[in-house]
Image: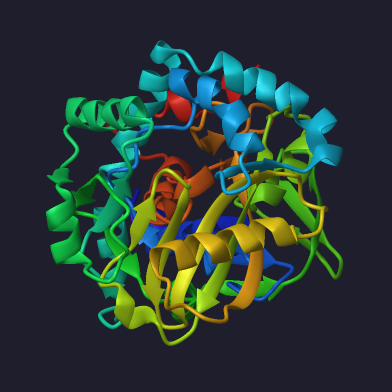
Length: 418
């Protein structure tokens, strides 16, 4: 379709995180009339503000894998492990966990890895298309990302490396000596590692989000700061979005609300098992000179990214829903882990908790609703929401424009849960 034939069509996008902003921008480039709606100012405290800032095209190996089931109990019991549960939330999580366990076979792991790789491979070119129109030269660095580990759990490390080799992911094994040459300030607790040379990072994800949002508005998009309450439909199946202030009628609508998307899909009578992994960050201000690029210490499941605000320490997966308060223990875990690698760190700032939308097979939902042909979804990108923002937006905009694609999009369909 050319831009002109789309210009009569209106699309409402609910949720102004990286998924919503990229989707809106790709739609406007295709000539649609687009309104983006969110109850908050974009990038305020959301996952698109607080993430690790990684563009990770290599990260196709999912968490649903046979070896994780052996590790989970020890992870949960370890005070500095990467996993935690809010016990009051466990009953609600049981159906999700059962589906997750079902997905931890070798066959399902490889299915997820293959279809994550399909979109991750296109993730950076899709951003580069959007970045043609905004200046991100001060905000994006192309220095790769390093993973490192001790000599524990080496079977898991071998599994990750071998799957990435099978998928053709570029990776460079590192000896302890090479890790030290690349990042001399890290305490030498590691026995091995790998550099993902194609990965990038941003020094400030929120600034990128706002640049893309401003571009969307410059190109004629509308942003409405309102709280979406419900979606209903006209006689000819067009979506009507009711907010706390208004009613909006659109030809089509897209749900890109991250961890909050389930409130919408439940209303639309679609049983999608979306839950939330709670992630935390802290900053050590003025210490960003200690690192050149992001590093991830796999044994403890946390990472550090040099950012404008200092060293951003991110990590831990906590299952506890959207309403539980932040856990001081998880924050302390990040503080101690960071000081373990960099003993010179002193006081930390900015304790932040955000929500990663996660499905039990660790694939996102990208595509039309099962029940309503004019509703589309893009959510459930778990740890890769930031990396996959642009490509998901590009795919959804192509679907709405009725374009053909040579990608196999069926694995991302919401109907897989029925």
